[in-house]
Image 1 (tube, rainbow, N blue to C red):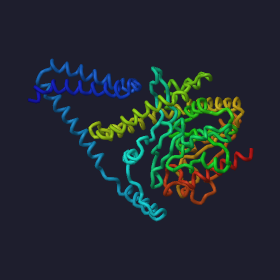
Image 2: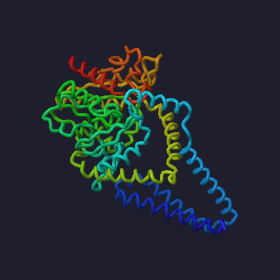
Image 3: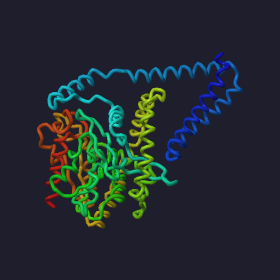
Image 4: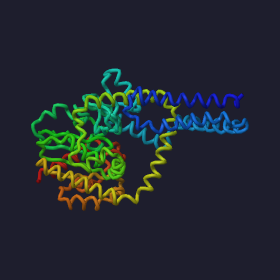
Length: 444
């Protein structure tokens, strides 16, 4: 029976997979993410070719193949079931209970244990305009490939939870974390670029660094930071969004992963154009409406995917992908010199842009949040800190070392992190860092 069904089942599965890929690529996304689905198309045709070939193999081989495929199938889904239902380690559960107790004692509220997707589903019932936070990506707009540099505009956005609650913010007209009317200012005292630490991860506005500067200075301040952005995207953001009348540009550098992010960014041909052609522009501000449409399609697709994540072996694929990325990271360690050279070029061009814009440029170095009771400087930063500081000083860019200004003399640096654990900063951490930046810039 299995031998007779083997070929028809293979053909059915192959055609079903191809139909699914066509549906996602050409109907849901209307070809906007076709490049992403190329590998799926290739896999579809390989499966179809294999299915056709099974007509010509003998019964014994079909039997062996059936056993192999069924074994792989049951093993994969058994492992997915295990990952989906496996309990957290005793240490993780202990930490969670401590967090819950601390949060309850401080706020009188319950620690929010929902997943980001659950929060999004709950909030969308109250406001259908709500969107989850997701990272910028490539897409096709009007038959042209672009790279989005922020999120969906004018929308309640679900961010993250490290402090016991999910932070949310109303995005501005370009998808950044600002009050929308901030863009109507005639001139700006501060414009920030950076990653999630600048974006304001896991705290509500106005507790992010740019918002605190807006309060301290009582002057217009723009937050152009966005989660997972690296130096090249941040330079591209300045090229696309920097207002002409800007007094101070604050370039926030995170020592934990900015070089890693840069390595990924250097693989994107659109982003490389910003390095190779100083006149290049995506004119992305004028495309925000159509970008919103495409990104909302992505939100809808991702939300639907959660409904059948088990079928797609999401947890297993994620685990495998992480292991592959770790191996790739190890192999690429020898390329750090190249990345430092590219970082220098990016900072040189950023300095040039600031001069042309009559703006002062400041480079703020944020150390990786891995402080412990017996450690005054995170080990992850020691490897490249001196090299990066040397590059910044060679380019005559004002250098602000947050470790030196804020953390070095603290008896317990961890008090500035959620529940005294590694992660982004808590409200107190963001404020003290913002105050240090403001104090330093005020000297110039």
